[in-house]
Image (cartoon, rainbow, N blue to C red):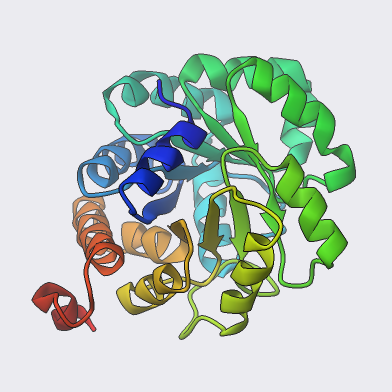
Length: 277
């Protein structure tokens, strides 16, 4: 399998911005999650971020928290998620990035956890509550399994901390666009443009922007500001949860197509994007 870093290099060579959708595993059920992964892969996702439901999701807003709660109430566990991925991943082009919190990793043991997700085919890992000061062991052990650990830069991060995170992060750097949790917001703050500039001054690693991007215009704006990837979570999770599983999957497919158009075509040139504005 091609690594996340190599996939980003290919996209850069083509001067393309990556689309990274996020969904929560097990909401409404793992069968629907598996089909959603296939649909996202077919409709323009360059990478897919899959959240493992957790009882204390500190970085997640109300939409994703609710999805995680529903998944946990139905008994969704990491082992089941990995069994599903083991079947689905071989048929996907987009690398899977697992989103989980640090406590479940420590509970299983870092090496055991990484061995389990590597066997399932996972290629990237986001751990939002992983302290930078404790990241080295996870990053080094993950590298031995061919897994890249992606670190987050917050709007409140100091310049020294930005430099340290940029140095340690693997695959790409996850730039959080807002102060606070994930969620759907009406607009992306202009400060993201300057945060991108600050990061560019200290690293040449790819930068993905997430938290708060919910529609085509926001995705297009972030791409125009120079992001290497646009990460969209709550908007996908919300659509997948509405109506029947079939209706949710159709809504996810449509949103993925709209976002892909937004980051690959000019707003003025794309009639299909004008229709969804």
